[in-house]
Length: 109
Length: 114
Image (cartoon, rainbow over all chains, first blue to last red; front, top):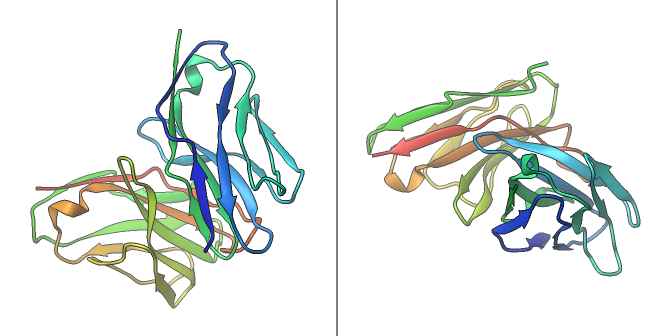
């Protein structure tokens, strides 16, 4: 069945460091891929999405490229800020929504 | 612009009590779902609905009931609360469950069963 596997956390980075959170997926058909972000005490919010192979989703300095050949959708940001501290979820939609287990990111000043 | 609204935000129950978590969306979405979030477990699907009058079980349905009498509302009922149901619950909705559609979440309901 469809599934998402994402990098285990927690991840701790210094401000202005480069961020990569790995996400790979298994799916039949042609899923859409998403990254959601959850700030403390809040629900999940859409960060970015890509609906077909080679699409790049981007928002707030974050980027992810839909790579069908490697079944991956890694999240990247060139320079993280303290305000980026949150839990990040990779997700896909096929006939249903499937979420990864989440990666906690803490950015220290 | 309300989106997905969940109530209550916090609740403490005694073992064996019943309660209903309310969820409403104002986006005319056909697809609605309930998840629970536990440390190290990510999000697990409890129940979902693809339209009024249609519900189905997700990954962890035991101990929970749902109904969908209107497009807007999708309440989650705990029949006899157990400590294992202590969790954060999220309601979510989408235009449909199929590929390409963004899913929108409520702000969560923190439930403690003592």
